[in-house]
Image 1 (cartoon, rainbow, N blue to C red):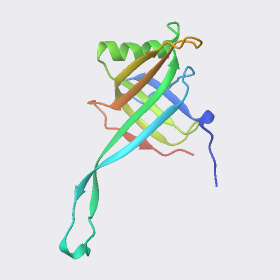
Image 2 (image 1 turned 180 degrees about the vertical axis):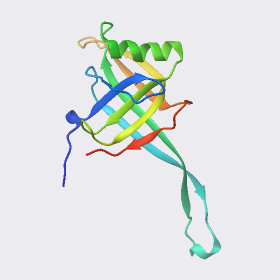
Image 3 (image 1 turned 45 degrees about the vertical axis):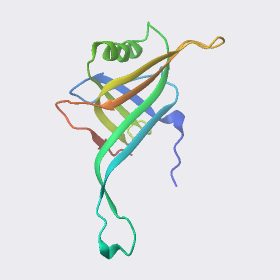
Image 4 (image 1 turned 90 degrees about the vertical axis):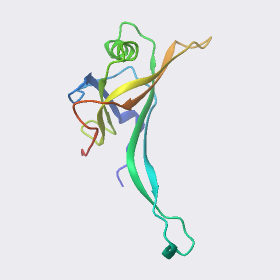
Length: 140
Protein backbone atom coordinates (compact mmCIF):
# COMPACT_ATOMS: atom_id res chain seq x y z
CA UNK A 1 0.00 0.00 0.00
CA UNK A 2 1.37 3.42 -0.97
CA UNK A 3 0.72 5.70 1.97
CA UNK A 4 0.96 9.43 1.32
CA UNK A 5 1.42 12.09 3.97
CA UNK A 6 -0.44 15.39 3.97
CA UNK A 7 2.80 17.31 4.24
CA UNK A 8 3.83 15.92 0.83
CA UNK A 9 0.65 17.14 -0.89
CA UNK A 10 0.93 20.20 -3.14
CA UNK A 11 -1.29 23.14 -4.02
CA UNK A 12 -0.47 25.20 -7.10
CA UNK A 13 -1.98 28.43 -8.44
CA UNK A 14 -1.90 30.22 -11.76
CA UNK A 15 -3.81 32.16 -14.37
CA UNK A 16 -7.36 31.01 -15.08
CA UNK A 17 -7.66 29.19 -18.39
CA UNK A 18 -4.51 27.14 -17.91
CA UNK A 19 -3.19 24.54 -15.49
CA UNK A 20 -1.72 26.10 -12.36
CA UNK A 21 2.05 25.71 -12.13
CA UNK A 22 3.26 27.91 -9.24
CA UNK A 23 3.60 26.12 -5.90
CA UNK A 24 1.92 27.73 -2.88
CA UNK A 25 4.29 27.37 0.06
CA UNK A 26 2.22 29.55 2.39
CA UNK A 27 -0.55 27.01 2.91
CA UNK A 28 -1.48 24.98 5.96
CA UNK A 29 -4.18 22.33 6.08
CA UNK A 30 -5.93 21.65 2.77
CA UNK A 31 -9.22 19.77 2.38
CA UNK A 32 -10.47 18.62 -1.02
CA UNK A 33 -14.15 17.68 -0.80
CA UNK A 34 -15.67 15.85 -3.78
CA UNK A 35 -19.39 15.06 -3.83
CA UNK A 36 -22.13 14.23 -6.33
CA UNK A 37 -25.75 15.17 -6.59
CA UNK A 38 -28.21 12.30 -6.51
CA UNK A 39 -31.14 11.21 -8.64
CA UNK A 40 -33.71 8.81 -7.25
CA UNK A 41 -34.12 5.76 -9.51
CA UNK A 42 -36.19 3.69 -7.10
CA UNK A 43 -38.51 1.15 -8.71
CA UNK A 44 -40.97 -1.37 -7.37
CA UNK A 45 -38.47 -4.07 -8.26
CA UNK A 46 -36.01 -2.74 -5.61
CA UNK A 47 -37.66 -4.83 -2.85
CA UNK A 48 -38.25 -1.83 -0.60
CA UNK A 49 -34.85 -0.22 -1.12
CA UNK A 50 -34.40 3.36 -2.29
CA UNK A 51 -32.03 3.41 -5.28
CA UNK A 52 -29.90 6.37 -6.36
CA UNK A 53 -27.41 7.27 -9.07
CA UNK A 54 -24.83 10.00 -8.91
CA UNK A 55 -25.39 13.06 -11.07
CA UNK A 56 -23.31 16.25 -11.19
CA UNK A 57 -19.94 16.29 -9.45
CA UNK A 58 -19.10 19.10 -7.06
CA UNK A 59 -15.75 20.09 -5.61
CA UNK A 60 -14.70 22.40 -2.81
CA UNK A 61 -11.18 23.15 -1.64
CA UNK A 62 -10.71 24.61 1.84
CA UNK A 63 -7.32 25.74 3.11
CA UNK A 64 -5.65 28.21 5.41
CA UNK A 65 -2.72 30.55 4.84
CA UNK A 66 -0.66 32.92 6.93
CA UNK A 67 -1.80 36.51 6.28
CA UNK A 68 1.36 37.62 4.44
CA UNK A 69 0.88 40.63 2.16
CA UNK A 70 4.38 40.10 0.70
CA UNK A 71 3.47 36.60 -0.52
CA UNK A 72 2.52 36.44 -4.22
CA UNK A 73 0.20 33.45 -3.77
CA UNK A 74 -1.63 35.14 -0.90
CA UNK A 75 -2.09 38.27 -3.01
CA UNK A 76 -3.29 36.30 -6.04
CA UNK A 77 -5.97 34.56 -3.96
CA UNK A 78 -6.94 37.77 -2.15
CA UNK A 79 -7.22 39.61 -5.49
CA UNK A 80 -9.31 36.80 -6.99
CA UNK A 81 -11.71 37.18 -4.06
CA UNK A 82 -12.01 40.97 -4.09
CA UNK A 83 -11.94 41.35 -7.88
CA UNK A 84 -14.42 38.48 -8.47
CA UNK A 85 -12.04 36.80 -10.90
CA UNK A 86 -11.21 33.14 -11.43
CA UNK A 87 -7.91 31.60 -10.38
CA UNK A 88 -6.43 28.30 -11.57
CA UNK A 89 -5.62 25.81 -8.81
CA UNK A 90 -4.16 22.32 -8.96
CA UNK A 91 -4.65 20.21 -5.82
CA UNK A 92 -2.29 17.21 -5.83
CA UNK A 93 -1.51 14.45 -3.33
CA UNK A 94 2.23 14.75 -4.15
CA UNK A 95 4.55 16.29 -6.73
CA UNK A 96 3.34 14.87 -10.05
CA UNK A 97 0.50 13.16 -8.20
CA UNK A 98 -3.26 12.91 -8.55
CA UNK A 99 -5.83 15.59 -7.92
CA UNK A 100 -8.26 18.24 -9.12
CA UNK A 101 -7.29 20.74 -11.83
CA UNK A 102 -9.75 23.60 -12.40
CA UNK A 103 -10.41 27.30 -12.47
CA UNK A 104 -11.96 28.37 -9.19
CA UNK A 105 -13.98 31.16 -7.66
CA UNK A 106 -12.91 32.21 -4.16
CA UNK A 107 -16.16 32.00 -2.18
CA UNK A 108 -14.78 32.46 1.35
CA UNK A 109 -11.88 34.59 2.58
CA UNK A 110 -12.06 34.76 6.37
CA UNK A 111 -9.32 36.47 8.39
CA UNK A 112 -8.54 34.96 11.81
CA UNK A 113 -7.03 37.22 14.45
CA UNK A 114 -6.10 34.97 17.38
CA UNK A 115 -4.64 36.86 20.34
CA UNK A 116 -1.51 34.69 20.51
CA UNK A 117 -1.31 33.60 16.86
CA UNK A 118 -0.19 35.02 13.56
CA UNK A 119 -3.01 36.38 11.42
CA UNK A 120 -4.31 33.68 9.11
CA UNK A 121 -6.96 33.43 6.43
CA UNK A 122 -9.36 30.55 5.80
CA UNK A 123 -10.11 30.18 2.10
CA UNK A 124 -12.82 28.20 0.29
CA UNK A 125 -12.87 27.84 -3.48
CA UNK A 126 -15.24 26.11 -5.91
CA UNK A 127 -14.89 25.39 -9.63
CA UNK A 128 -16.27 28.24 -11.71
CA UNK A 129 -17.41 29.12 -15.22
CA UNK A 130 -14.34 28.98 -17.43
CA UNK A 131 -12.94 28.10 -20.83
CA UNK A 132 -11.99 24.68 -19.46
CA UNK A 133 -13.90 22.08 -17.49
CA UNK A 134 -12.57 20.78 -14.16
CA UNK A 135 -10.61 17.56 -14.53
CA UNK A 136 -9.07 14.86 -12.36
CA UNK A 137 -5.36 14.42 -12.99
CA UNK A 138 -3.86 10.96 -12.48
CA UNK A 139 -0.21 11.10 -11.57
CA UNK A 140 2.27 8.72 -10.10
